[in-house]
Every structure is written in structure tokens, then in C-alpha cells.
Image (cartoon, rainbow, N blue to C red; front, side, top):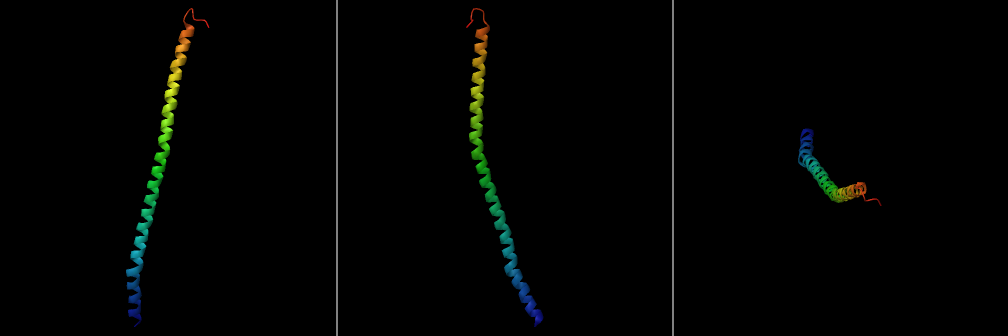
Length: 82
């Protein structure tokens, strides 16, 4: 009788606990993947404005450099003493 009771507990464990354990692992991995996707999207949303800002700054600095180069050339030409 004792052996039969131990078999029932063993089969119960196999039928209930093992599938629950594996489903729990799969659920945990799914949650981690979702979090990774959300983080990637947040990073992408943060990087776009920063890149745009850098492009605008680079454009501004290039124009400023050209303007200052023109001003220094005009200043160095004879007859243009301000």
C-alpha cells in the first residue's frame, strides 16, 4: 500500500509541478523579452532627438566657421580696415 501511495505522489508531481515549472520559466523569459523590447524602444526614442540636435549643432558650427572665415578674409584684405 505504501508503494502505491508514493507512486501517486510521484505521478502527481510529474503531472502538476513539472509543467507548471516549465511554464513559469517560459513566462519569465517572455516578460524579460518584453522588457528588453520596451527598453530598446525607449533608447531609440531618446537617441533620435539627440542625433537631430547634433546635426543642427554641426550645421550651425559649420555656418559659423564659414562666416568667421569670410570675416577674417575681408579683414585681411587691403583697404578693409574697420
